Length: 168
Image (tube, rainbow, N blue to C red; front, side, top):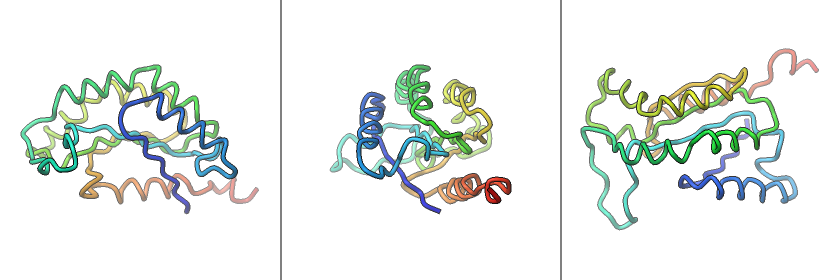
């Protein structure tokens, strides 16, 4: 398996599209048109540290509604359409990764459902565009690695050729 990862920090859709298109100009681009078959979109429950010298973030009782609303505004229909429009191969796996779950004090099943519900509209916008791809919402932590192995296993499972593709 080869995983090629592009991290476009922030919610600037213009930067994401520009960087993706620039990569297509390179010989043998890492994320060439037609070769991207999985997509993971990452959103955060709370904002990042204001700067690298700020103290580490501490667990909190609730997610930051301003941060969530900002991300929902940025990942509007136009932005989601733009992302899916850049992908020319058939997607096999799509994940909305809700990040920074390690900073939530309440990890009860009802709280986890509340965190997922905060991004419910975005999840539905993504789900509508997935076609036959498997779609899921995963709560996790990129910093602590919470549920990252789950996503890695899903990527491997869905990136493997089907029996018909393997025999071609």
